[in-house]
Length: 88
Image (cartoon, rainbow, N blue to C red):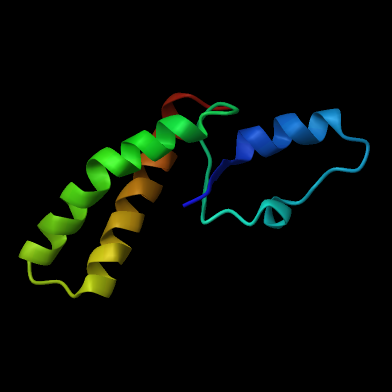
């Protein structure tokens, strides 16, 4: 997975004469609420807790697709909570 933070894109675009859109980097996961260049921390968080969240959802009877949606929803909520506590 390629993680990209909104703050990282803003920091890079501040250095460019022609700002780049996020889709130019083709990330699989875009997150906000964290500081610039914290993609490795997000990768560690998802690698550590993603399988746990996914397995809990599957044990709860959800399909693979629904369990993946739950995992995505959890990390989206974490991103929003971080943004609320630490606004960029």
